[in-house]
Image (tube, rainbow, N blue to C red; front, side, top):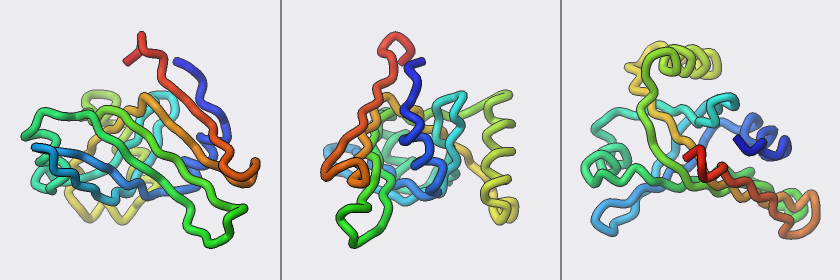
Length: 148
């Protein structure tokens, strides 16, 4: 797998909410999801019930290609950072599901109180804007197309 820029990984690890965007019948929808990122698996893991609109739209349409974003909220232009990404929704199972659950609960212990319906998002393209590196500076990462 193409190595992800450590600055992107650091940013992803510093945050915990992503915005997930889906579409069904040309109608877009987005949702905010708490996540943990499994670096070795190149996968965001989040929990979401099957009856939520974003999951239902993806499943019913058969369109598991999604997009998303993670942003740092700041009014200081010189500190703006964020990523936009595209990828595929997947359902973790087996050993990956065990690892995902363990890591998710480690990061969000309160989730032990809820039913966990874990989903994975495997990014294939990430664009990071980091104004600390210069106004509008972009870092790009693409998954090797042979690994998709």
